[in-house]
Image 1 (tube, rainbow, N blue to C red):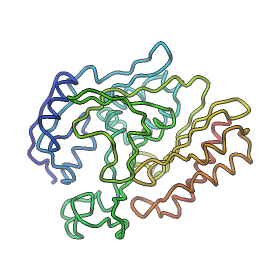
Image 2: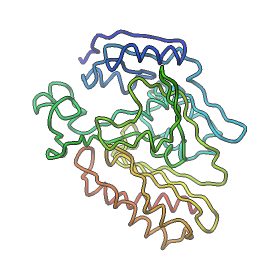
Image 3: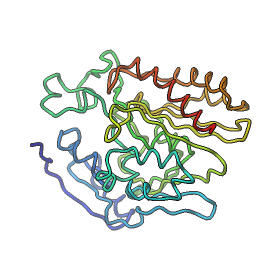
Image 4: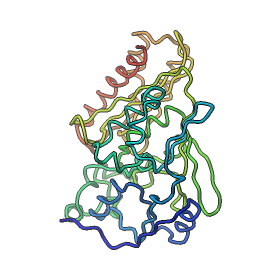
Length: 326
């Protein structure tokens, strides 16, 4: 039986108190909300924080609130089940609703939070093993070793971002607020995931706390999320495609993000530029599906062969755009 290591547990009542705790404890502290990913990682000794700063008592970090301008404010400690049960999210933000419903299982969605999924640890076939297995092959870069076993010649870690909510939030233009003892800052989700290294997958500093996720009003834009995994439930994505388009007849704006193919989500900028100003017809969809996966470099670090995942990226981009056409 794998057991949790010893740790100190802090349960602050406010976000500012939590920020001060993070500052005081330093890099040996970790934030926990639902704990559905962190606690198993601690049991496998992926992370061994000396202190956990829990968010459960901070009411301001929970809740799903619609604003008058049609934007949506999500507390990072809102459970995935809260979002899944929202009929308004299902209607106004179908891509987000589909992504949340695809995460794990109903039991774990009762505990897991949207903030936790957004900040989900990266993973790969070599990292996601117990401590004894990892030591038998010598620890990888992500666990303090000197070799990335996915790409032994690389100086970077190739553990992949396997969050379902991340590509959707990027495609929808969501922004996040980060609070520390020094103040706060607001950045786009694209900026939060601007680091292409599995060891440092977020630009959030260790002393910063995620306090708000804001999804802007979508107007008449249409969005969709598609996910590839071996089983129809529970599994993490080995390919996730989020797509969003604005405009009737002619595409005024397109957002296309592919995830679970590398340490950082891939915004398919070339395909987005190609789609702008064109009708969403068969020829446009086929060409965009050829362009988008060019920026993806899946390696042998998760389920299915890399060549198959690359091939399926074309298929899933095409299916996503066909779904947006209606």
